[in-house]
Length: 120
Image 1: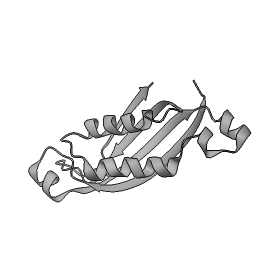
Image 2: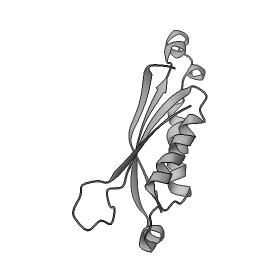
Image 3: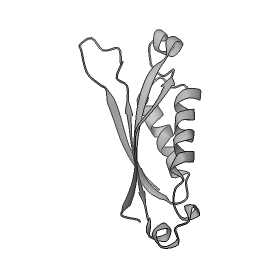
């Protein structure tokens, strides 16, 4: 397994995830942070995009999941985003954090997050 890392932090996308009816109807902005464990030595030697993870394409795929799929729990959303990352053949492991800053909780909070770590 690679000990190198590619980090994508602060991706935002509008989605319709939540347990409450108004969350699923109105939607809200979610944040996503992804840390990919990848062996970057091949790309470091070759200087070829084919030897690493195309993080431009990955951000588009992650944003599409947030926008186009719907889940009651951000735990499920985080799991789904991890699946998308692990579908890249060069990714050995991934840590995904989903931010839900406008979560409907009874007391003021700056952010609610769920973090999952998954390995191939």
